[in-house]
Length: 179
Image (cartoon, rainbow, N blue to C red; front, side):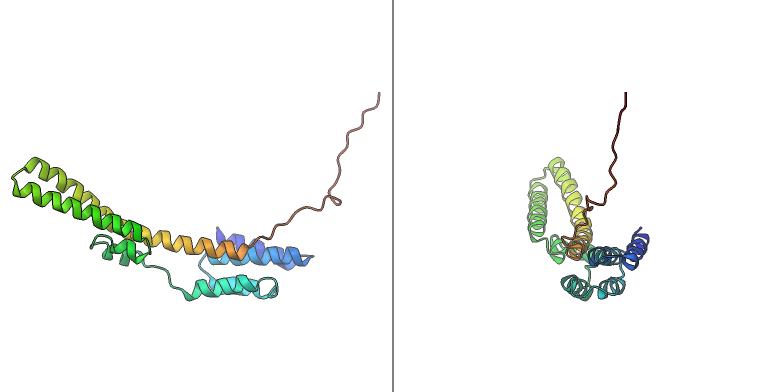
């Protein structure tokens, strides 16, 4: 639940007693807002720690300025084998889809011309399966593209900030035995 995560990071940010904790909380809050689709909330969370989070703010601005791929457009473009993949930038999959659909269609034409109807039905089955997979693949490629964009943005926003415990302030537990 990204809204709850943003709330908890916001609470941590407001109660942070060091700049390191404040930056960690601001970055976590911004990442949670971005995952829930709220780019404005992500920007707002980063504004309080501007010097330390300038790159994260640029990342949020770039992410918000670039539109997501629309999955149904990828599916419609997938009606022409390979275009749905190409729409999302998966050019190797686009070429593979185009080549294999072409080979199956060629096999269908050859077997039909030679009256080999059993082989024709097998080639047709594989072509229809591959063709519908190309349509679905265009939809799925758009979803993968959008998720990859979001994951990269969140990774940049979170940065390399790590909070490690101060070993001097940790309570010590000791066992003493008396005989």
